[in-house]
Structure formats: structure tokens, C-alpha cells
Length: 142
Image (cartoon, rainbow, N blue to C red; front, side, top):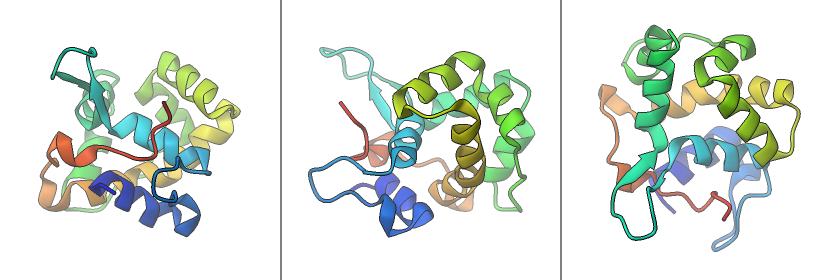
């Protein structure tokens, strides 16, 4: 189990922990992993796409740089409302995540706005981004 799995499991409590070799029963864990874990750009390439770096860039692009920087930094985490999170992620991402979780967008955004600040805070101790290899996840569904 990688760093990302440990942090998500701790944030969600034991209900978010998958059994070894199994995907999480809690769809929010899989969604968080989907947002934060990088994935290969193509089967034959070593390049990674998505993940925490992409999420940070998305927040910056959509005007929420101060919010995500507060989660990464060592100070207090700024709260984000579900409506603000929709703006920060972009509607396409919200649509994709909602479809992946098979959950209403408002419910999904409410849960993500609750957990995402703390998870990113824990993944970035001392304001340092983790190595992308440490963000591999067993929660991701294939």
C-alpha cells in the first residue's frame, strides 16, 4: 500500500481501506485516488499524466491557486465549498468523476470538499510535493 492509500484510508477511516489486492468498497476513496494518482500517458510510455500536479494546475487555471496553496503549505487549510470545488475542478472533470462514482454530482462534491483539503495537506508535509511514484494507488479501479 502506497502513501496515497495510507493517507486516503486515514482520512476516510477504516471503511476506506481496501483488502490487499481489492479495490475500495467506498467509491469516494477510488475517486480521490483517481484525482491524485498519476497514470501512464500511454501503455508504451513511461511518462505520467494526471495526479496531484495536474490537480494543482487545474486549481490554478480556474482561479483557486490560493486555496490549493493553503492545503500544500504549512499554515491553516482554507475551506472550499462544493460550488467552488466544481469551479476549481471544471465541469468536465466533475462529470467524469460523478459518472465514475455513479453518484450525484452534489453528493460527490460535498464529500470531496470535506476530504480533499486534509488529504492534500497530509500528502505535502512541510509544503513539499511527494514523488509521483509514491502516489500509486490500490484504490484505482481498472
